[in-house]
Length: 319
Image 1 (cartoon, rainbow, N blue to C red):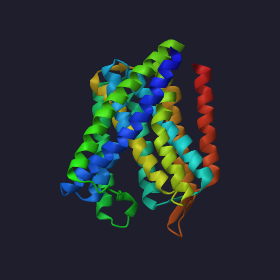
Image 2: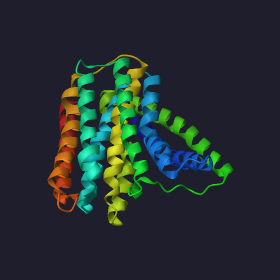
Image 3: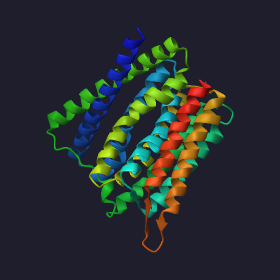
Image 4: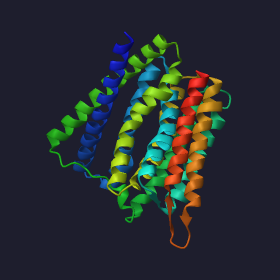
C-alpha cells in the first residue's frame, strides 16, 4: 500500500511540474495578445505561475485540513532552493551578482524571514498574520516593478512562446485543470504516507513535497550553469523564496488560525534564516566595489549544500 502512495506522490509531482509549465506558457501568450508588455508579464504572470505548484499545494492542503503540510512545503522549498539548488549550481560554476541583488533583494528576503518569525513567535499563524504577509508581498511587487523602468535588466524579460489564440487558451486551460488535479493528488498521497509512516505532515511537507517542487528550479539552474548562464539562478531563487514566505505561507493563515509546532520556529524557520543570511553575507564578501559587481564562489556552494545535508540529519534526529 505504501508503494502505491509513493507512486501517487511521484506521479502527482511529475504532472504538477508539467502542468505548471503549460499554465505559464498559455497565460503568458494570452497576456501578450492582450497587449501586456513582456516585462510586466515577467513580473506578474511568470513570477506567480512558476510558484503555482507551491501555491496550489498550499490551497489544497488547507482545504484538506492539512495546514502543517502547507507550512512544511513553504519553508522546506526555501531551504531546498538555497541549500540544494544554489549549492549544486555554485559547485558547477560561480554566479555573477548585480548591485540590486546584493544590496536590495537579498536584504529584503532576510527582512521577510524576520517578519515571519515575528508574526509566528506565538506559534500561531493567524488570519491577521496572513494579511501582514500579503501586505509585505505587495511591497515586494513595488520593488520589482522598478525593473520595468530599467531596460538594462534584460534577464527580467521572459521568453514568451508564440502560440495561436486557440493553443494559448488550450495550454492555459489544460495546465490549470491538471494543476488542480495533481496538487490534490499530491496532498492526498502525502497525508497517506505521513499516516502510514507515523510521521507528521509537517515532515512530509519539509522533505518529499518541498524537494519535489524544487526539482524544476534545480534542473533549470544546473542547465543554466552548464551553458554559462549561472547568474540566472540567483534571481529565480530570490523570487521563488519571496513568494514562498509571503504568499504560500500566508494561505493557511488566511483560512483560519493554525497552531504550529515549536520546531517550525526553532528548527525550520531558523534554518531558512541561517541559509538566507549565509547567502547574503557571501554576496557581500564577494562584492567588488571598484568593478561594481560581485560573485558567489564555489566555496559558498559547498557551505550551502553542507548546511542542507546537515538540516536533513537534524530532521531525521528530531522526527
